[in-house]
Image 1 (cartoon, rainbow, N blue to C red):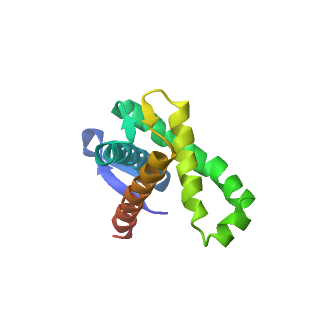
Image 2 (tube, rainbow, N blue to C red):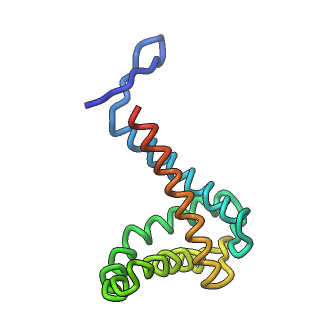
Length: 139
């Protein structure tokens, strides 16, 4: 098991276990996802997020939807996804994005096309965040 040593009270080393690092990574990823959602607001006018707090809640809701609902929708729409060579997955991502906006005050998506573009931008930013963490953890 990997551990990091840091200096705590009275200069004694404090050992941070791998579990704590995973929690820190999750928290940082959540904060960066919320920031990515705010970036979507600045890059595309069809998506509006009123504050960073709302962005944090929206990032959490989108993450939960993608974890719980998305696999079910992917399975149910598998024939359509195969026929469209996977392009229908963009529609599913847009639906998750749009559904999260429908549940929260302060997070607004103008229409389905705005949800599609917003989810595409958010996905690209999410890929950049994941790439950042992969490079950070590989060192």
